[in-house]
Image (cartoon, rainbow, N blue to C red; front, side):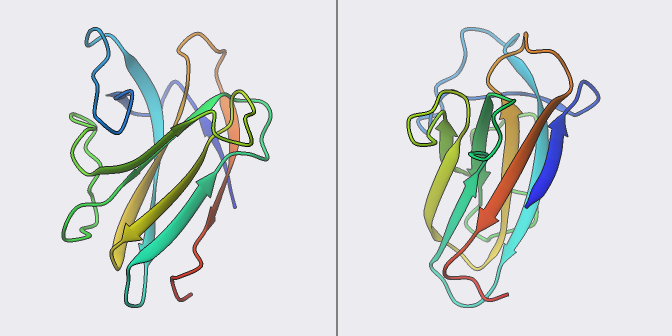
Length: 139
């Protein structure tokens, strides 16, 4: 479990709106983001669950990234579309605000999880609790 907080000092990126990489109406759709790397070990394919369901204070959006070689940096601040494999906004048991991703078919190697807020007008900092689990990766 990771205790984090989206802060004004965190890097900015233009967040896509769906797995289809639909772009926002213009390039002013910038969000602060925290990015975490997780290494999946053992032969795949792997499953990964990432969620902020336990946190009721910040409206989060989660995105999971992995490229074809499971390299150490599939997430790109300048172009967040390539290598996006999972996306969720508001998926925790129908609750507004918190997010959960169930990514399947992941390769052995690095996965990056991006945590951002759903809006740009929420006051900073925006605290969250990120829970990560895999039923296929060896410790």
